[in-house]
Amino acid sequence: MMLGILALFLGRTGLAARVVSLIPSAIKAGMIMGAGLAAIVVVFDEGGRFSQYPFTISIAVGLAFYLIFSRHFAKLKASGGAWATLGKLGIFPIIVLAIIIAPLFGEAPWPDVEWGISQPDFALMLSEYTVFGVGLPPLSMYVTAIPTVLAAYIVLFGDVLQSKALLDETDDMRRDEKVDYNPDRAHMIFGGRNLGMSVFGPDVVMCGPLWAAMQVVITERYKEGKAAMHSIFGGSGSFRWGTNTGLLLLPIVSLVQPILGIALALTLLIQGYVSVRIGIMEARSQRDLGIAGVIAAVLVIKGATWAFAVGVLLCLLIYGRRFFSGENDGTFTKDLTSDTTPQRPASDSTKSLHESDASLDVH
Image 1 (cartoon, one colour):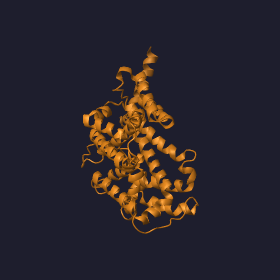
Image 2 (image 1 turned 90 degrees about the horizontal axis):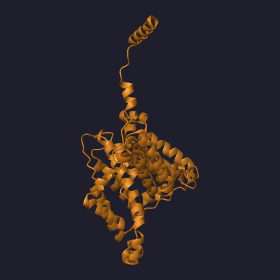
Image 3 (image 1 turned 90 degrees about the vertical axis):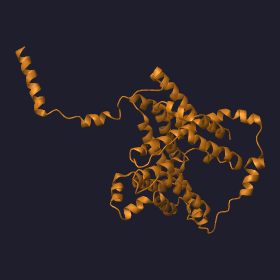
Image 4 (image 1 turned 180 degrees about the horizontal axis):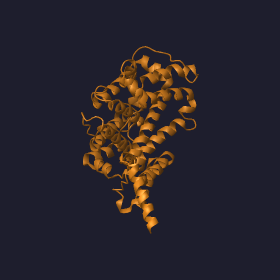
């Protein structure tokens, strides 16, 4: 509730967009990279998903990366036919593969398919999970929760940066549609949603502004052109309508239930891959990259609050008065420049060398 009120306040006053625009590129890069690395660590950490489903995750994730990011498969899709159809299915083939191979490796049971429609227990939720049943906490709890709210907002702010970076990356490839991402409007939307959820159905997992893995899959498909996805709004809407419909159908729910942990690992690893790539590209100089690397490591180990504080301190120490502007040393363009710079003809170089030798002999 308090997080929703804070987000609504920042969005309504226009402070959200100002804060996003003022954050140094080094901190943006570090927070986005850190989110990606944290997602990967969750999967491979001791006791994580990989230790439970090592063979299934290895095979399924390998295929997922090939289908989504491989240049070779992109060429196969362009040739049309069955390859193009397979590419349009997104991560669906990987989920189907996981349902089959996980039981074969003994990492999950075979699904016990049930028929019918899911029947959520709304009465139980209202009586034991919402303010209508358990009541509102005392005022003292709201006061003591203020530091937690601020820490949660820093995590949320990292998602805002990542969401904006993902959408900005599509601009160069899709000139036919202008995607106007407004941080103020985004704050108003998820702030209002969180405020409503705090009353009618609090769910911490669903309180963030971004489902990163879903947005990655959508934007990767969107970048393939209008034939692949007419509009990013239609693509996102279709994805959500499909997932929400699936939650109501018991055959689908019971079919994927044994491999939910594998599906989560898949989405986290896709998020990690893209977040690290985008985070690095947010940097503008080699100093930015160094700061971002430290921020990302601190975020993984100590959390977003510590990471943000370390980022502010490092930017102050390294950039001083140029805290907000930073620097741009051409790190991401110098290789391109050197490759495209015309080479001096060999004859000219040889001629200059002979002339210098001759002048030395004269002297």
